[in-house]
Amino acid sequence: TFLDAAINNDVDLEGFGACEGTLSCSTCHIIFKKEDFDKLPEKPSDEEMDMLDLAYGLCDTSRLGCQIT
Ligand code: FES
Image (cartoon, rainbow, N blue to C red; front, side):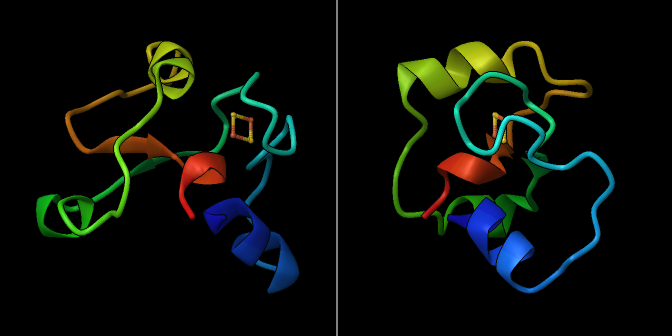
């Protein structure tokens, strides 16, 4: 996932991915550019949508980084 890639590459994003991908935080919230968002392979699951609703600054091109493969 995007979260795995960030961790594996030692990307220092303070507080990012606090729940380690168990869909219980929303700290992995990412806002994509529209053109990039449209290229993502899969649509968000209902569980991801529920957690996204709690994300700060939610917008139409928001996703959770731990759910993007
Ligand atoms: Fe917690 Fe993605 S890391 S929801």
